Image 1 (spheres, rainbow, N blue to C red):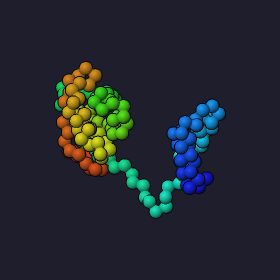
Image 2 (tube, rainbow, N blue to C red):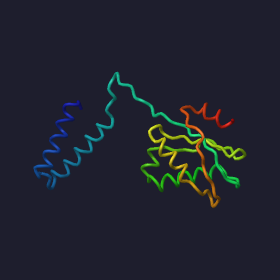
Image 3 (cartoon, rainbow, N blue to C red):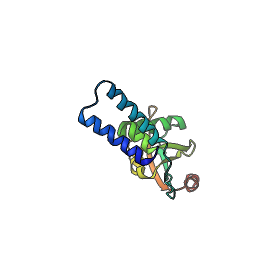
Image 4 (cartoon, helix red, strand yellow):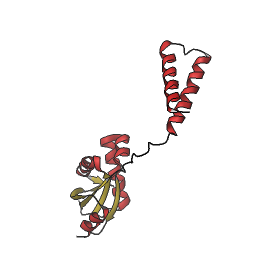
Length: 156
């Protein structure tokens, strides 16, 4: 099916729905056509010459101020729960926040987040006060664009 035919199908479906002809068997036909149009929209090829941009990440190196020992899984769950409480499921999914590394001895870690949501992640680190019943304060040290640089800062 070509793009012109696809546009005509979409217009005819919308026109039929607006004119109120969607009754009985015509209603089933319209739903059937909408499913076909949706499937064909999903399998269309990208335009030639256009490059897709990959999502850029930022890496936040932080230090945990606490007297207790915190494990990587506990900290990861606490960060995800705090993100969910503040920004909801959609915010959690769009930021793609993830604890990459955490050194339990030095109490330093790296969080990866999408570039557009860097400030959201910094807010999360500020709001996080408790991890598995242990009081903790996370202090961001630096924000980098590469994991290599973040690991270098983590080892300082």
